[in-house]
Each structure stands twice: as structure tokens, then as C-alpha cells.
Image (cartoon, rainbow, N blue to C red):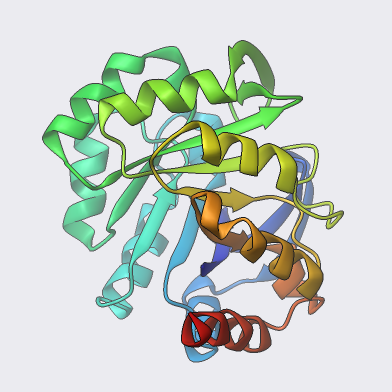
Amino acid sequence: MILIPAIDLKDGKCVRLKQGRMDETTVFSDNPVDMAQRWVDEGTKRLHLVDLNGAFDGKPVNGEVIQAIATKFPDLPIQIGGGIRDANTVQAYLDSGVQYCIIGTKAVEDPEFVVDLCKQFPDHIIVGIDAKNGMVATDGWDKVSSVSAIDLAKKFEEAGVSSIVYTDISRDGMMTGPNIEATAELAEAINIPVVISGGMSNMDDVKNACSIEHKGVMGTILGRSIYEGTIDLQEAQAYVDSLGADS
């Protein structure tokens, strides 16, 4: 299990949202590079970056900050989502040192786009599936589609995406616990790794996420919980590492 701290970027700052609402913003740092350093110092093995402005504008907005983080930590795998709508953006991110690009809204609107990206950039494309009541949400969670999360995941498994980031938007930022059941159901329905996202609040949630690793869940994204201190990243990382030592 990989624990992946999230750095959500809005106007160049590190923030967290509640249920994806831009008007429900908490600023945790004016310097996202320093925040990345904190999580590296606490043992993270991957970072999850989100260009929130980009998710709403449909194009990268916080590119300079993202490049600064990737440049400072060249050996750390970084995944980035938010506003990736064309191949040139993917190429630019990969050139800057980012390892994975997450496609969300565009994947629902134009599935062939993901197919083409997987051919151009094999092993570098992740599909982010944001869902509410099992149905996919798009456009920064402003809209809920008629596409089921499992059907979409199966489609992109065939396309060759490297993994799925699954977010239950009713849980995200609320610290009410992740949707373990829905994530396990999704992971069992496909044969590519799933990363669980949304609602992580304490060590019990981390342990619950680890309990479905065998179903195909490779990692979990940690957001508000590590910023507000209800999960200690070092403690959680030590727990996950101990499971690996026991296996």
C-alpha cells in the first residue's frame, strides 16, 4: 500500500476543498514546495498534485509550482491532475519531471482521447474517476453524468491506463471515512490497480484501506487528515511498511 499525500493547488497556494467546492477552501500553505518537502521528510513515496484552477478552467494554471516541485524532487514519483485536456499538456508535464498524468473530465467526454494518450505515453496515464452514488462526476464535480464508475473503469482498463484514482465526492474533504465498499467493488471488477481517495480521517481508515489491498487497491491519497493532524504520516507509513515486512 502506498500512502500518497495530496497537494491541491489554487492560486499558487496549497489548499483543501470540501466536496470539491471552490468556495469551501482552506489554505494550508502559501508555499507548496515547502509542503512537498515536509511530506518527503516524513517518508512519502509518491505525491498527488491537483491543479484546482486548471480543473475548472480546463487548462493548466499552476504549472510553475508543479514544475518547481518536480524539479526539487526528481526521484519522487509525482502524479498530476486538473485541466489536462490535450497531449501537449501531458508532454509538458512529463518533460518537467512528473511521472503520471491523471485524466478526469476529458476521459468521460472523449474516451478516445485516453486511448490515444495511452498509445503515445504508455504507463504514464491514470484515469481519475470521481463518483457520487456510483455515477461519474465531471467538471470539477459540478456535474454528475449518466456513466457508472465501474463501466468507465473497465473501458479504460482496455485502453491501457496504468491505474485508476477513485474518489467518492460525498466523502472527499469531509473526513468521514473512505468508501471502502465502493472502492473494493471497483477494484474487484477490473485488473488494474486502484488508488482510493476521499474521506481518510484516522489510522482506522488507513487500516481499512490496507484491508482491501488484496482486492487490487495499491494506494490511498491523504489530504485534509494529514494537514489537520488526525493522521500522522510517519506513523501511518510505519504501519504500512510493517505490513510489507510481515508479508
